[in-house]
Length: 219
Image (tube, rainbow, N blue to C red; front, side, top):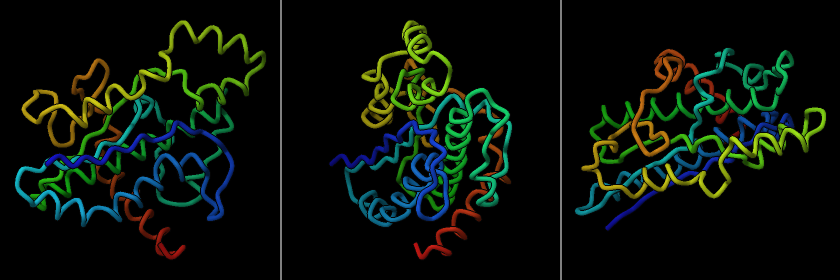
């Protein structure tokens, strides 16, 4: 029996707030998958304890996580940081939310290892994709059609965005690139994450505030 949970996290960088006062980039890219995973984890654990099962959580990160300068994840104000100094604030919010995904994934992988869980956790980078989110960011620049046309020569089409996630979800565990906590990077190889993503104090800060926030909104 093969049981796989795969999260294809949307590349959103919008500034709009949801009903709980959280920017949509953090709400969709990080908080939603976090709640979904937390809810399903008991079922995943019980399934992983059965014979002949392979249970995986595959989160979609981004190479952009390595280029985040604002590293505070301890408050709602931090989560909603406007990044006004940036040429593309929406892209900075996107990268910030993706670093949150990396921090959470690494924290979850470590905790499951400590608990000797059989659930495997992986994180992937889909590559440089001309996604809807990238197009929305480019539309904020002067002469958007030019930038979309130009980057079309350098960015991959959206159909290639799932390659690393499918590899992480389906490749047998004896593949040298598949291991608990691995970061799968095009062309389907395990690489090191940025030091910021491996910072356990930052992981704990994110986890602590996330749980405080969820309690405050009754989740």
